[in-house]
Every structure is written in C-alpha cells, then in structure tokens.
Image (cartoon, rainbow over all chains, first blue to last red):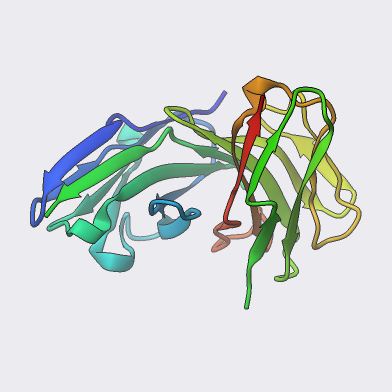
Length: 112
Length: 115
C-alpha cells in the first residue's frame, strides 16, 4: 500500500532559523504532492502543492518545497521561521488522482 | 462564504450508542471524504465519495458507515461506537479528485470521545 513518511515528529527552532521538514513517499504511479498546515485548534489549510512543471514550488507565507522524483521526496523549506509558524505540518500525496495519503505530521515549535 | 461545515464540534458518548456526525459543503464539490486524526498517525482516510450515491472505503473503514444521497452532504455514522474510535474527525471536499488543481477543503473538525 502507498505510504507517506515524515521523518521529524517534533522540531523546535528559534525565530529566524531555517526550516526543512522531510517528506518521502512510496512509489505508486502518478502523484500530486501537497503540504498542509494545521494551526493550534484549527483545521488543515493548504500551504502549497505540486502537480507538474517546475519542481520547486512556492507557497504562502514564504514556504517552498522541492519535488525530487528520483528520491521520492517533497521536502518543505522556509529560510527564516517566525513564532507564528508554530503549527503541525502534514505532507500529503494524491496517488493516481483518487487515493489521498497523509503523513503522520511534524509538529513545529518556534521559540520567540 | 465557501466552506465545509461539520457538526457537532465536540461529542462525548458511551459505547454502543449510535451517532452521526454531519458534513455539508456549499461549493458544489463532487468529491468528499472523512479522515480521523490521531497523534503520531496523521490523517487516515475512513471513507470517500466521488459523487452522489458513490462511496468507497479508505484505509480505516471498520466501524463506520457513510451515505451520499445528496451532493452537499456526507454524514459519518457510527452504529456502535467503541473507545478506539475516540479521535478527531475531519470532513473534506474538493471539486473532483481526478482533476488537477483541486486541493482538499477541510471542515473544522469534530472531537469525539467514546467512554
């Protein structure tokens, strides 16, 4: 069965530090890739997505992600985090246009 | 305002007492799905629906039922809830899962506790 792995369960950073959250997925045909963010007490919101074209995608709030097909990876990055980025981040993969799989999530805590 | 509405937001019930969590979207989306979110496990899909009267099992369908009699509504039914169904549940919709540029729109979640 297809699966999505997020390697970091909890990341703690100071403000202005750089962020990289790992996401790897199992092979399963055509994939579309997403990162969602869940702020405390809220529902998931789309951060960015990749369907085709430039493998470096830019999302909201200064986030970006790079799709590396050969490594089955879609890591999320931000050059300088802010306290307001404290949230849980979920990588998601849509396989073959109808099977959406989520990673276990990475909790990010940014210390002011 | 375009949104996915779940009710109730919080629910505490006892083992075996049937319950329904409602989900409604006002965006005319074909695709709707239910997820449960558990610590360390992320979101796991329970059931999904590609259109009216079409439903399919996700990863963890046991103990749940759904129906899609109308496009806008996709209720989640627990016929006989058990404590292992204590979780945070999210409903989501999208225009259609098979078309590009169709991210999921999530509801605000329902926190269910089964004692």
